[in-house]
Length: 229
Image (cartoon, rainbow, N blue to C red; front, top):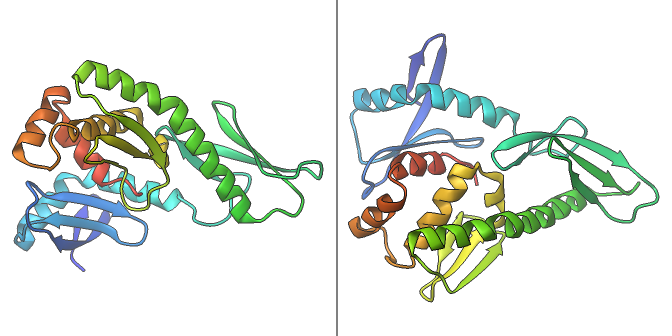
């Protein structure tokens, strides 16, 4: 695996040749590590691209290390609206199901005595769906009014491979996990899908329309590609 030195750290990376991309993108994920995606380039050019984003890559690598796939316990961190919040877990023999409370500074999770980890997972999914509907619905209406891009229906679902989509009938579907993103990336996702109500593909016309409403879309698109779904 190729690597490049940055300060006192070494960044190992892999290259995934992807034809058709307008530029090169870098993603950082737990299982696949640092991946450079785009047209074929020389080793020297690949290293230049990695070094250009080295600080961002190292920040992402450090963040990925903090993401726990194991059970939720006191001291765990849960991501919400772009930040990771401390978790306090309480057992209570008087409750029959998992209770999720968010206090603006931490998550308080109350569980029955004989709970299973899947119970917490399901409760968190329900929490994020409610919050996505509550916080993102007015945001989409606001952007629709500002951009003049209208949609027919809005749905929130748990999606595995995409942050959102727009159907041929202009129904916008948003991944409930989008509420974990920062507001800047949530806005990018919303405007991206609203733009698809006018242009159904990712042609030059699409990006031109998107840039009318978000001039910094390239930076936001790159950040979105680096987010773990």
